[in-house]
Length: 128
Image 1 (cartoon, one colour):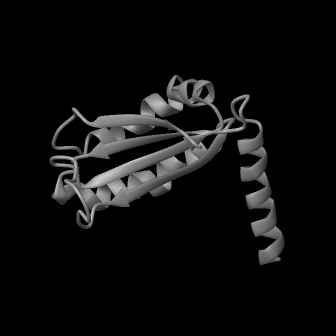
Image 2 (cartoon, helix red, strand yellow):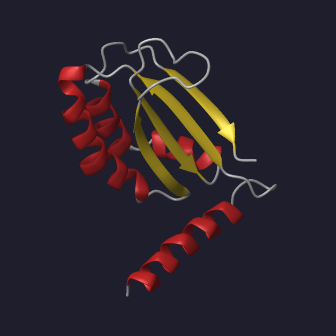
């Protein structure tokens, strides 16, 4: 049963990537967030219980992760950032369509309200 589930999940991700841009590559958005340490648990709960489930139902969605910063290994960490949000969609157009939905307009502010600085860095990558 578990193997069948994993195959269907992985197959869906592969299909989404295959249907990405003409070159077959998806996009990945990295957002460095300065989350108030007193609101860290709240932000993680919102991400896992509200934001990610809503995003996962959108056309082109591939993955969403919230990474907690541990330590720099080489170079410097983004100033003040203690979390990195990573969102993967098959295309940038599909990600923008998700951002324009009423559910995104309702769920992203729940995460933004946990930040100490609303001026976060957002970097868009093409998967190579």
